[in-house]
Image (cartoon, rainbow over all chains, first blue to last red; front, side, top):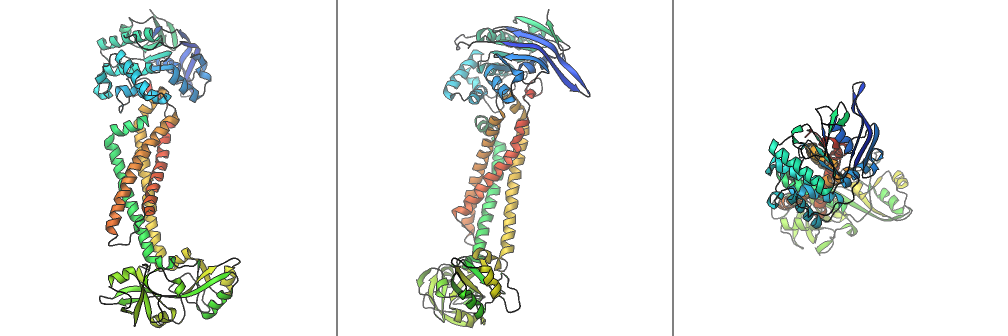
Length: 236
Length: 357
């Protein structure tokens, strides 16, 4: 991992305090998160493991400010996301959050480099500077210049996931949320991606939370938490 | 426009198909618009070009006056009553009828206007007709090889061509112009058809209408008094309206389907910080690009088609007749796109998480 990237800005990490989230289920409500508290410091790589339906995705959605919790606080970049308007939360995601999606979720019409440049367009960043940053970032996750000009269908699954990671890092986020990054990859490439995430967490000083069901790929993480029935416990 | 332009480049086939649909509809609308204008001119340019601001229709005693050139007659008393009316600057009686013109070729239908010199169109050559003389339009002169001083048969009378005028027509027949007495002689009618009046300040048209048993209308409204004019224009304008509605629906339907297909991408963009306003602007810019390209191409094709067709059919080939339908297509298409892309605001970014895609 090259260390030539610009020094990261001051980090604040992520904190969830007594977060409860319920869903409607007929006439009742299901509790997806039950008074969950979590603090992730800058440069810390935390994995949350658990079976399907345990609440991992809900935890990620709340941390990503995509869902408002019924109770509790979600502190991101020093702001309580639960009290912000939809527009303010969108801006908060744009400026302080990186999301590595499960299925890479790249836009079919954009090249690898353009997947990052669209974020620069959102921010009104100057195209020339943004292009150079995008090329540098993509190279740092292992995508050579020729592949940077390819569209998603012209890349392998592992390469798409690298672009996905680079896109999440492009906005220099203080928090990186990772959603099952290895689900579409074989074990070897999955391990490479987790190693890459551990590296970018260290280099970019992000507070990284990765939810996964794959316990075989947790070697590079700093901390493992278990999720079961909406509760978070320290893993083995 | 960042995503919009790249989507167009990536899905070029789909957007080309949509652009082609816009092009075809615009071509059709431009062609129809030009034809409507051309037919309107062929039916009404004689009346529309009269230098007056009101046309007064009359009726025989006991009958109610209607806006109809074929049934209107004006008596000398009515003319005198209007001339004496307050605020009336000028009253010019004119006669209007249909007949045929015979020269060295086959007979042709013409409309004959018996008018005072003040109602004549611009003369290209010659002088205003006196009794037993006629001024013919440039188109009629060209078709019948007529020149000033030549004899021509108008209905039952042989008249001398005194002038060549700007081409005018009434009820799709070219107009020839003569004096009111000569018109009365060749049409067999003793009374003029209507009055062309110019009003000044203080004119009370309703009171004069009531007093004289006449009906005064603006020149534009008088066009509906031309037989078949309202029905012809109404039919063509109805077809235009349908085409505009179809274009908005086609564009709206395309962008509705396109937006639904893009929902996963929209969810991802929202999840990474794109606002709904940014995404709606991007989508509308995309629609504008497709509409502008399609409508401009369609406008060009319609103009070329109109230029070719104008040799055989009345066609109004002016900048306005092309620009108006092109602009209308773009605006109505954008309206359809607005209704379609508002769905963007309802896309929930939560859909980007998990295995939803």
